[in-house]
Amino acid sequence: MFTAAEPELIQKRYEDARQQYALLAVDTEAALQTLSQTAISLHCWQGDDVRGFEVHQDAVSGGGIMSTGNYPGAAMDADTLRADAEKALALIPGPKRFNLHAIYAETEGQTVPRDQIGPQHFDKWMQWSRKMNLPLDFNPTFFAHPLANDGFTLSHPDQEIREFWVRHAIACRRIAAAMGQNQNCPCIINHWLPDGSKDQPIDRLGPRQRLLQSLEQVFSVDIPREYCRDAVECKLFGLGSEDYVVGSHEFYLCYTQTHPQMLCFDMGHFHPTETIHDKLSAVLLFQDELLLHVSRGVRWDSDHVVICNDDLQHLCQQIVRGNFLPRVHFALDFFDGSINRVGAWVVGTRATQKALLAALLEPTRILQSFEDSGDGAMKLALLEELKQYPLGAVWDWYCLQHNVPPGAAWIDNLIDYDRRVLKARIQ
Image (cartoon, rainbow, N blue to C red):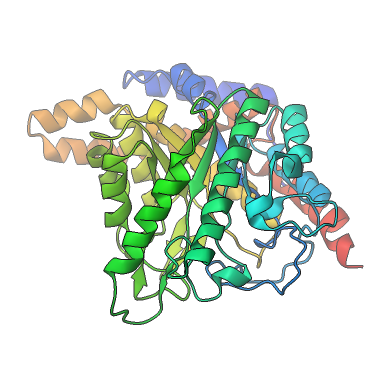
């Protein structure tokens, strides 16, 4: 249905595009080389609707994250999830990473409390990482647990519950360090927790004092930074915490100014009309590095499949214009169980790469010269003309270089996997 153009035609289109961009002093080869060195971390939880593989003594509970939809073929075990991920990875050009949550431990059917998990429970993931040449990232799981029932974990008023989650976070940092050592490069571990209140808490200070105390305990454990890089993630509101989130933007922004952990910005974690691209140049004046969760907010929901929309393009433009790319870590964060889950991975990752490529192909010097000379109309005119430039020809050439179907040709591959593998799981 979606037959790719012949390689010779793709190359010819690329050569024409290269010359067109060269007229604006844009080096497409340099842009492609930079893109080829920029990894995107795919998130495991898109493949199984954030279920994980825990063996529970109690029913799974504790809110914070919910995937909706019942498209056939969700992965139900680690081997199936890895197979689905491999299919997605084969349709995405360039370097990738893979992001795990603690609930994806493989415990051989045994119930292992979250504060007792260790690197051995992720040994198969690390073997797979070596086989695939695919570095891993990691996350503690502070939700979907009986001790998260009331919406509080590291800020819980009960000291025993709070200390359980502190031990869980420390265990996860040790797992991340083992992953980093296994792959010989740092594992990025992101700490997000759903702590908050649904409606009008009287005490807004106390939980934040307890969270601060807990974080001090978590990060007091010496973990080799060359293998484990810690990030903390803010949120405006979530399910069950619509009125108040303990780990707000202001809390973590101040925290990371006085502590070595990096800040994590999720594109969907702010007001529905608030974007994060303007925040980068402010934060990176003071921070060495930043973790980005690339997502798409729609009304109140923060985790729709990423597309190459204005928000994503503006984000990538600011990263490239500010020369921030070496200091920014890209990770995806969305979960949609209403569509083909493998396709969601591919759509979101390719969209992120396309937005970054478009930013790398921007004639920033010319645009800056217009701005410096007060030629605002000329700047806007060129920005508009760039929308018609042959980005697709450069993108198809990039895909061809990385042995990935260019253009829409990958969709046929997805359709085949959907019919032959995913939907066969429900028979």
